[in-house]
Image (cartoon, rainbow, N blue to C red; front, top):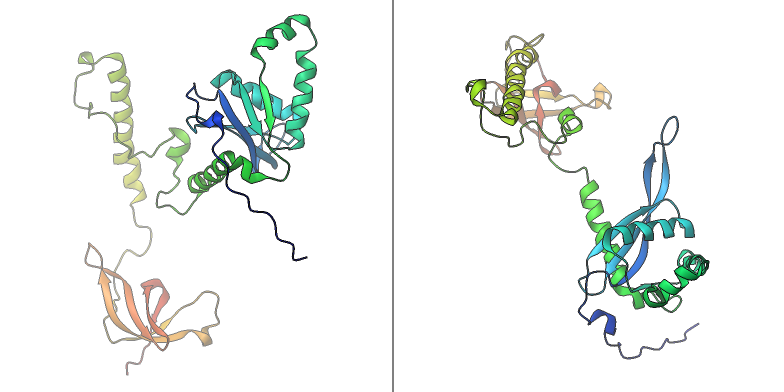
Length: 291
């Protein structure tokens, strides 16, 4: 129960990490996840479990990512084939003792030994698979750090706490409508433009009409057309809360109002028994009796 583990001197870096070579000649592989992806096979869609297969170069520490659907040996071999097709065939791959990696070694060996031609070719060009000791993740600290970095950046990319709204333009053209574009071509004669510039001019004409004809319709006021009431400081008000009974609404006194660019105030600062808060006018009920 109180046994102390051994803490030997930290080993030196492996020679594979110190030899200059092309990227991914010596590399490590590990899995990260699980994560959920949207499956669009067949009718409807549902969330299914998937994993990230990470390949990391020992020399340059470059990372290659593949998405796999399960931890099976077959999916790992498919990911390995895609990796080789993109980055080239490695000389040696290091990994932990996961069953999918061990199974892949046995299955690859069976495939490679089927024919004499393949066997002769792999005699000089065979990919070596090397496994670290079982239950020793610190032996694979390089790819463990790669998985950690991948998860960190993946969370940042998928984080929705940014200040950019998701608009229809993101689905239509892949970017906001206000993204930088080419120069204004709407006033130039079409005969002076090339094919690409003419297409861009037509696009600019479309968005010009959209801003003049369609957006102007959205700015029409169907209600709240008059500004008959206003709130001034020192007025006693009742603060409306949607999920609270009216008898439990807070009382407060207006200390300051904040006019907009058009000179109309729409937000007020209110002092209550529990501190100072800010509310929009739509949540403020002025009391008829002023004290």
